[in-house]
Length: 228
Image 1 (cartoon, helix red, strand yellow):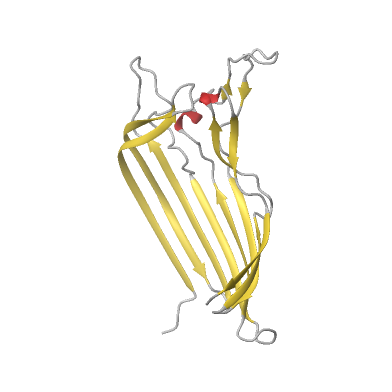
Image 2: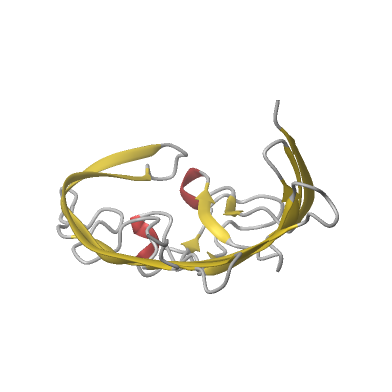
């Protein structure tokens, strides 16, 4: 029986989550504190597609849409909502959607290197927006005031930051040749030199260091592999 030249998979899911542990800043210090959230959920759809239209050419695609939210609200002793843990708010670090696509072409290199197979390939990944922690989606959460006078500064100035982590796209390319014994690969990762915000870091609850964790910049390299 001949191998099919395409495959398609899809799945839908729903997760009911109880006593979810959520980590938040502990006031104006650099420690963290965890809270148990009684109810939360995540639901979504995943699809995967693989296609070989002609010999040696392989195309892939994968996508995911996900809704991940709190289904209950956590309050302090005075009734105030704690750190954005509110019914309907998004869970931290979960994008609403992710997309990935790839293409690879493999070809024999007998005319140049006996027993070798050459290839060129590329992949692209797109990640939707996220929040580092639940409190980041509360209005005004990105307004930081140090209240620490220093060097002529009053400490009362507001540093306003959008804490919503924007979506980003990463493109990777590589090419080379290989067999079962050895191979050589030339690659370029993050071809467009995308500066993606992966998470937001604040020290002492925003009274000190403020900064985004970011991804690796454009990287060009060569990998040589040898099997023994």
